Length: 176
Length: 181
Image (cartoon, rainbow over all chains, first blue to last red; front, side):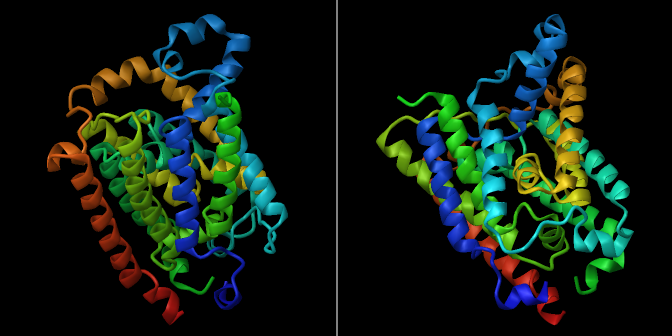
């Protein structure tokens, strides 16, 4: 990480924020508020419609979000494609186990992947209860000046900061 | 008019590309951000919102873009944010970044994505039980800063100035760990 401080291939945060804000305003102009946790609902809805169409019809949560073939679904697919294109043209190779995690918990992939699965469960369960995620509620909501977005944003940052201190303990203070 | 699915795909590609380039799809960088060692991602997020709010204000001056204001439920939004924050602090991915990170080739992000699909399905099953108990009783409605400050323009500028202060504070409080290291 220290070499990255000298010459980082990452974009400067100000330029990146200008670029992303431009994309968000474009999305508002052409679609409406962007969201990504809704894409999970579209995906699950699409999968369940194949095996249990009656169940999908009976559940309020699937009725309120469109299935596949919607902006919400193609947006998250696009995110994966965008990540793929960016990753292919980037200097730093990806790791399956992040450096800081490896320092704390060792190189076990099973341990990291299990935690990743649990974490994924939690962030989506939370998002669906709140009605949005980092993008759909904090970023979209706050952009529209919604109190719900600001409230959600403050609590997710605070809790994540506290959690990471508990998870990483003293490792967090060492060089990574 | 371009169909929505193509607009969504194009917007997603651009979005995913930018968040990879700033490092938001890197869980190591995200963990360092949460540990107050790396100020870039939180500053990036806060600045993005401030600029988007002003951009949306401009858009609203020229037309009527579709907006959706979610209600604030003191209990449900709060509990949801705590559950979310625990997951985010644990793994360093959120529901958007894990798609881009999976596309980037990070296997742990693929597991986050799978966990997310299960979490979604479980919540959808419990929606009819949880929403009336947690969400509706303490909902104070779709409040915005415009309601508090009288109009949109004032609200947007209050947010932009408030977030600019946040960016400054993050720069002061974070970073110091990183530099001394």
